[in-house]
Image (tube, rainbow, N blue to C red):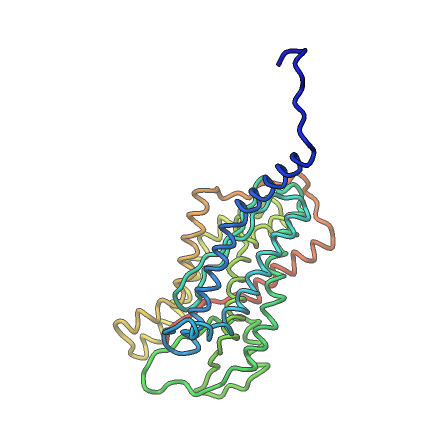
Length: 330
């Protein structure tokens, strides 16, 4: 434009309208896929919950609604977990994505949880601890009352004696304390979880998996905030320890079964009791190949005394939630 040319002026209302349109487009681009995946995960958990409640596949949309007693509390737990991370990230001015839920319309869960992406480095250990711990703690704040309510409405029944197989959920110290604190379970009987109790138990499982102190999992963030670069050595050792746990669990259940005369496919099923830890070790190994085994460093290496207590509590929570076998068929 030449020096003498008139400048173009635009009405202020027109500029505001353009800005609003751009903001709306950006919001849709950022949230459309997460909201679609969230709706799909609600649908998949409703379907699995209906199968659980009806003991068969639902034959109509009305029957799918029978899964609400599982799907709604589970989605509440997952949403609390993911938005715990999201809101903590926003508080610390970290560029975090909305949660991307992963639907899986097959039993026993109906979902593979959700992930959140963080762009850029978290600059302080205080922020790292807040973001890493907020998800598990918020999720547990919902999962525990859901589980307690569900256990109160679940029945203790005799185990099958006709040789049929059944699923036994993983049992952590916290879960066992709640279970035996609320129910007397005589010899030859067990708790049969209703849909809401199952949702609460899944909340414990998801929290435990995320609190493994590895890499950039929630537990890895918390451990790095507490220990700094020493956490990188812990991550590398865990890639060796997790398969060892899988072997130990297989031996714990498999050797007595073999001595009792169990053979063939039935013995293989028993030996698979610890396979989830082996699978998780493989997933973490793949994550290491793509993202490396070292946690991104923070610029500020200090952790406030109050947050140090939160970090220790959060890692202790992992110990209370640890399940040697996530679930097994017997």
